[in-house]
Length: 59
Image: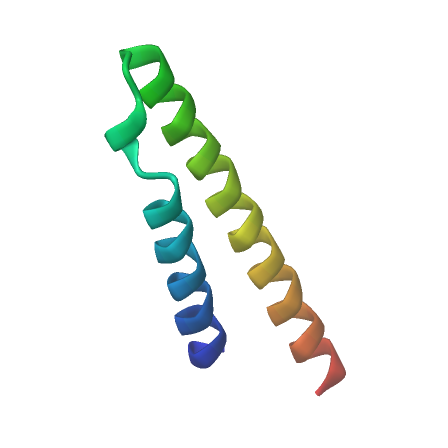
């Protein structure tokens, strides 16, 4: 699980780099970008939780 969490952290860091806020012009655009990243992070966390539960059930 630790290795998986580390991989997901790297993925999220890459997403944040790609979605740099340097190209947004307004507060609304920045807020939308942040909320989008939040949604992605929640989806990743949900997937990690599901995978973890499946691994425990297989054992």
